[in-house]
Amino acid sequence: MLALSIADLQKQYKGGLEALSGLTLDVQEGEFFGLLGPNGAGKTTTIGIITSLVTKTAGTIRIFGIDIDRDFPAAKRLIGVVPQEFNFSIFEKVQDIVTQQAGYYGIGRQEALVRSEKYLKKLGLWDKRNVVARELSGGMKRRLMIARGLVHEPKLLILDEPTAGVDVEMRRGMWDFLKELNSQGRTIILTTHYLEEAEQLCNQIAIIARGKIVENTSKRELLRKLDKETFIFDTKKTVTEVRPLENTQFVIVDETTIEVTKNKSQSMNHIFEHLDSQGIVVGSMRNKANRLEELFMEMVE
Amino acid sequence: MMHRNLISFTSIARKEMIRIFRIWIQTLVPPVITFTLYFVIFGGFIGSQLGDIGGYDYMAFIAPGLIMMSIITNSYSNTVSSFFSTKFQRNIEELLVSPTPDWVMVLGYVSGGMTRGICVGTLVSTVSLFFVRLPLFNVPLIVLFALLTSFVFSLAGMINGIFAKSFDDISVIPTFVITPLTYLGGVFYSISLLPEFWQALSRANPVVYMIGGFRYGFLGISDSNVWMGLGMLVLFSVLLFSFTLYLLKKGIGVRA
Image (cartoon, rainbow over all chains, first blue to last red; front, side, top):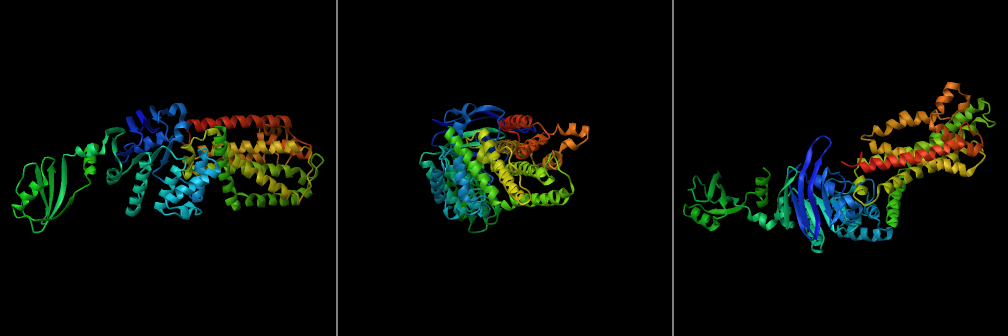
């Protein structure tokens, strides 16, 4: 079953800006799907249309087979959304925000109270249930939005940059939580700027640029496409020259740092042997950039 | 389905009530102070210098008008400020992403406007007891005029909130339209006392009929046709409700 099926989606804003120009995308049920793309590529517009915050110019969207033009309310019941920017009333109390949202989905008050307790506890906000939302920290506000997005127990959860501005430790915690939700069978679509996040979480990745999908494949397949990788080597002694090697490029950044770009066919052992034969001893090494990031830059340029 | 809609409605209504009573210093206290001053200054100091209108002293004549004025302004200002701040803080999105139908959303916000309008109207009526003993000529008519007028102005406030893009926009209509219409709507005088031309002009002001009908419910006298007033309120209710639904369906002011 397809959790989400978008066909030829177009959006032209009133000012004439064309945000989406024929975007087509399928997401299978149960997937952890990453939607990546530079700022202004159309990620948030796409999510806006799926959740009815933005009207589409043309195209069709189906949520678990339900056409949003035919029965949007039924489709909405299956979607939970965690937006990029805070969009709750800062004057309301944490638990009120969650129970109200449940109410908007037609969930009775008693059940809403039970569910809000469950999700606020899961997200570590139960102690803050009677606190006015403006008093929460940035990370707490984000978690509040996740609790709110889950309270009607949607089959498809869409998160737009959920970990923006969240510290590293909390980000790891959120990743674990999202993985747990996905393992329970919930389909998750995530947009993110942190490619490491997509690499950690998503099994399927689509890249969106200029209002279109330019790549849509499994993460493994995507990483396989990388034919070049760049490493930074820190050397033990000063290096002034490196002899050339086939399928490899060496750039001396400074006296003890070499940037090594290798083709997929080249082995690391061979590079080390090559350097060793010149008396260059590598003390440590690291990836120059996240691997996905390199691919991403190639695709959106 | 109806059951779900009822839950959605009560959730919005509940949120609106919490808001009204949370900020009671802004929502309930100021009208009580303002209208007490009206009673003291116009009814007491000035009214004592004036003769009767339609067999009632001036205080009794203006009291229903003042109560109605408080209902009009408070119904309007509640929906306009609540809906606009919901848009401004973007928590309107909580409702928009949910399956709540537009008509339920409208009724939810209008229920907030009516709650505040009727609460303030009741408070101002209570204040009026210190100044005058109003007769009750026709109670159902009083209730009907109060509820329908509150409904109409709550809708009008919501429409203003839908169009508003800034805080300035939410005060323009109250200042330039609502206040003049109510002040010239026969709160402080009987329009039958006006010269011919101004009488005719006043009859084009719908507020004249609302205040006229409401006053008739208390005193049994009116300077406008009561049934026409009721008909007008029903017509405005239908028109404004449909217009609000149309705006939301088109996404005007709420969807990009």
